[in-house]
Length: 70
Length: 146
Image 1 (cartoon, rainbow over the protein chains, first blue to last red):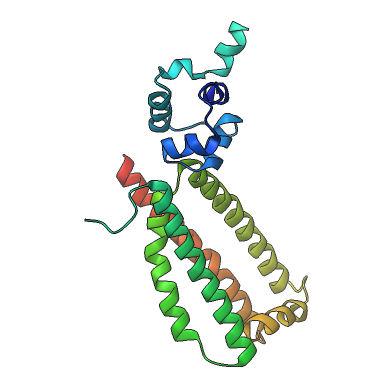
Image 2 (cartoon, helix red, strand yellow):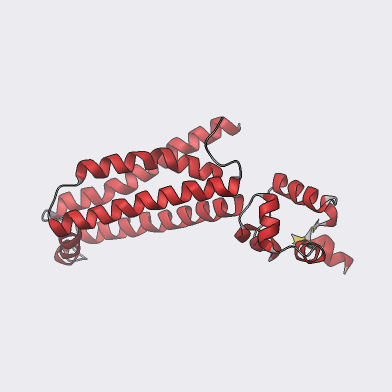
């Protein structure tokens, strides 16, 4: 699973800790999601989408789909 | 109204700190009772009981990536430990591992193991309890999610 979390966070000038506070998760979780080491659950993915005000598919994409698009 | 923090991050930090504090206290008391020769068994039992209540609370409040890491660490750690205990038990019963070498370690830390068969029985009791607990919680999980 790929995601644009780091880019979206940078656009808003938020640190990982800021985003973690908004999502009510640990900073380590935000880091693990950003680096692709952990795929969030569906409820957390929806929460992330809500925090950024974007649909989920604009934040997360399937590896195969992303590779095909490249 | 709950006295617990509303923020999940603060709540999980509270549970974690209390849990770590209790475990540290258990560890310190164990070593202190050995070093100074006093009986701490009753206090230790009272300190272990709240851990039984706190553990599910902490697990429930844990954030999902940490929870996943915990599940993975327990699964692989305990599986490896069960295998290691099995190898050690076979080694001891077949006289492939000298009992004296193991007994000298346990004698130092937990007050001695002089009888090989009792030691092996104690050794196997741990994994049996773990596997029993695993089966019980597998059934509970299966009933809750079917």
